[in-house]
Image 1: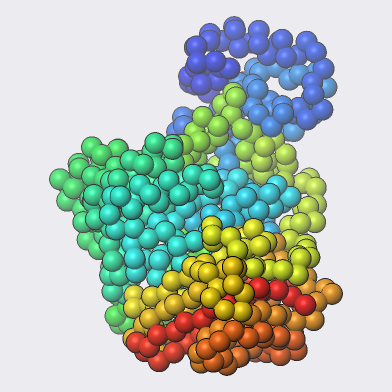
Image 2 (image 1 turned 135 degrees about the vertical axis):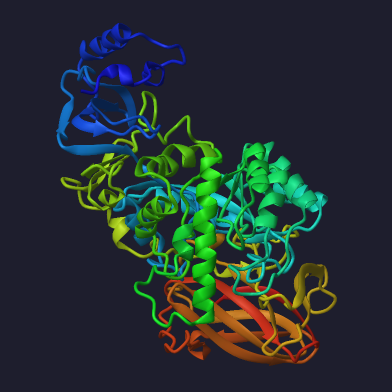
Length: 608
């Protein structure tokens, strides 16, 4: 028979001082002496797996104001508190996923549906490795309207041309290649207050494409040191043993992937252990069987995937056995790695790697919380912790498959999914925020801080890839047609490839998060000087619409009615009809032949 002595009372106390059992009973009695707040309730009769790895115990867990206020087999229930009878159920801390991408190309593809997928899987804390820092504030506000996990936003830092930088400008992924640049990158992020840093330190893209560029140890070390001064943990995109050792020596907190190219030696395992670095192996994204039974087993790419996956499983186990912390991350949002379901699958894969179900659950709760530096707030079931809790049917610490038998999910003490849960907020049933209107003037380019007249951060929208067009946008004085004023200059040297492109976009709202409805406007007007053909685009949540213009040197005014914009096809799908709603950006740019130069001057960009 399980008894209370099998738990350490220290982690059950309200203070760091160890309390004896009678003191806990007295505290519970004090709570019982006065009526409970309206949001107080007790979960009674569940087998509590607290996330520390201790054996489950049938206990009462009391929650008030979104926090756990008492835990124990004899914890008193405050007078008037609601009672949730959970006999035969398993109560666990909410699950973590320390590596996800809330990308529009993922499954699901929009923030409310992604949030819902995690909530319905019992995942109560995740990271988002996809967003530009400009979007953090509006996204944080949006999340408050949703039934959602807690989301930690990761600032993205890579090398020029490196993985993660090959498709984005520096408003999304900062490029560095020296310690000085690393320190400057961290400094530039201070206004945005990211929750963590993702360093793309290994250019090896999953082993299926050439190495783009990799970050050297000095730069990565300077980045980690500067981030730690802000208490921001650093996770690295690193998938090879040699680069994993570089990350360990550089002082990063955790690998953001598993090591796959070969099996670790005992000396390498010892070096990683000594460094204190953890690993979130993201087995779910690499699982060659994730889409079901495989077809041609003689496919070289499949054989490579199977071989690398075997290495990843082996390295997870040897590192775990050596005492290296293993966390739960999936890379969800990538192909074949859906949000929510992949987190549960990752737990199964950790067991496949050799962890016990109990050890895998600790990886997905306490260890993940420690890596994200939120273990004082959540990740275990203990007094004072946030009431992020999940009830399951079955015993997932014995059979990991029982994680699919979800019964109820609580976030901040509120029932958000499962039996008896209220309907999802209306915001969860949409795919976007409500559209807003904006003033006619988009940008007069008078500000020198890269921000528009709408107080949004302009973006450079050049092409991607290792050989990408070099472009510079800057505010310059106008020399004709507006003396004493300023304009935006775009200059570019085109990459050596077909369809090389350079351009810039002006978000209509901060971070391009809130869509805009162009009600009352009939078109776009701007002043421009250039040479050759250019493209003007209206980017939106439902598609992209573009028009073409041709210019000669010398300033002139261009007026483009919305009827001049035609939809751009998305792959094999035709573009959507233009409605004037859901618009997020106005973009101008152009293409030239490989190696050629492009320039244009733009001023007074506005709707009319």
